[in-house]
Image (cartoon, chains in turn green, purple):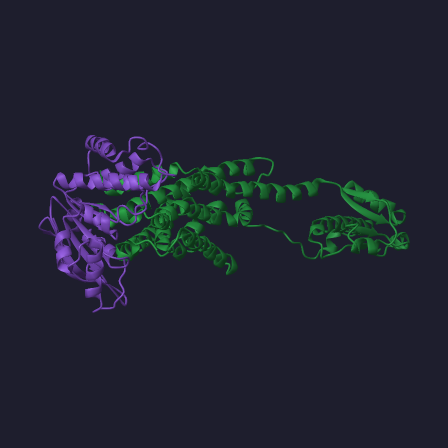
Length: 391
Length: 249
């Protein structure tokens, strides 16, 4: 049997017996992201939806001055709360979210055909009140426009007179693209899963092996160091890939529920997403494995290796942040950058946009080149005499 | 047969090995004796091709070790200073791993394991996971995996380190058995009695140099001392006053 294969099988066998790393690689790592997404989406969107349909509680002062207006508002969802004293203080001390105050001269102004004032009391520093404020505002504008049109019609004119410009909004974003905004963090979760899946094994098989004093006897066997390295890399990549596959599967299930369930989120998070992305993730898992082994080769202990690999986990955020901050559009060159290519592909697929053959092959080619390059460096590091000697 | 020819090795400012030459014959036990930090482990590491000498040559069974390290390693069984086991594998699985890397067939492997576990007294723990093994059990497992391919040449780096009296005795008997079977055994130690009791040929190393070598009797004669410990001290004092470099163990 080939030496690399022997090492590979032994590393897998040993890892499968380690419950703790197994739990990390195959359960917590891949499922944490999808789980967080479901929870986040459910709470965020759920609250919005609930709010939009729920009656809007508003303290109304002076309702007796405008019974018709209040009745009309109540029709569109306003829930009238009894008037209170000192509404300014109540709003400031956050006892009350919104107050609608109707001045005593409202009816008089109304009857005179002038514009009658109503007052809105709120605290704009409280973000959670904003959506309620928006709703109340649009209710009031609606009433204002309706009444205005009626008055113009009563004077025998066209209501269009008051609207010299008419805005027709035609959003060119596909419904998916709007949903993808929420999901722009999803690629990061996927990359993180790739990093976390093999991390424990990467540390255990390199710095751990040295710390346990089992590396020197291993290297005395009549086997080339490249073979030993290849076997270890294979095992780490497999763990990383399993993690990614589980994660993709979990996201697909989550997507099924989020897009067709009560949320009806317009994102393409289905089997197509998983199937298209997986081939791009395979070389990435290999790249992650070889990078992790390279980094841990310099660590003197298990603990030091953990610190270094912890830092490595932050790397996938950088391209995503740059793309978001600089508002870069997806372009072909991005697929030539390993990691960025996979992230862009994930974003595009979520958006419902296709990822073409050109992009796919660019990403595959560049990532595999990076794997070869880093492997060559790692092999040189592994050939050094110092590597075997325990600190 | 292992031949060390004029070996040198330097780590930064430290000349760890400074011109070491000796021959370990087949069917004999050769002892590398020296204080801590004398350069024993570094010398052995060069012999089992983990390190390359800066200068000098290593010949194993008549072949140059540097030109084909893999072939050299196939004829070597090594218990290095580092003897960590995989704690999630049983003793048997630990040994099987090395057997596979040596390219042994399954049948031969099981045959050899049965043989070694009988001679080393491992039957009772051979199928247990090595986590929580005593020092003696660990050394026995490490020796078994090092010798699984029945190598002609055997290198043991301070094999009795950390072992109790009983374990040391059984290891001593094991080494005698290897010698009787015609193996070339080279082991290092800093314990005088051990070396005196076992070795046909003793190489005394201090500060990276061979200060004396020969049989126990020859060394006693050379130093004009009656017991070997006095001879050892006398020989060290005599030669090491010249150089004052520190060595690595």
